[in-house]
Length: 70
Image 1 (cartoon, rainbow, N blue to C red):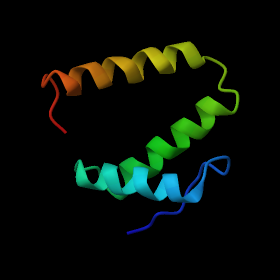
Image 2 (image 1 turned 45 degrees about the horizontal axis):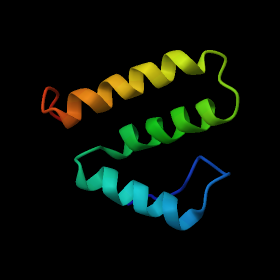
Image 3 (image 1 turned 180 degrees about the vertical axis):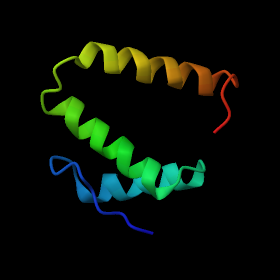
């Protein structure tokens, strides 16, 4: 498993734990890499952050309520 973090601003240990949690939830390595890139982009000045946050919160809502299967 590749636990290389694309987010250079976070603690390596927490990134490894997050990556392992995503693997346990069934995410592929490509999906995990995309999520890490999206988080880095968002945290470091994405131009339309609020839209990204809304989409991510909506996806989180769907997953937590069983409306979206991973």
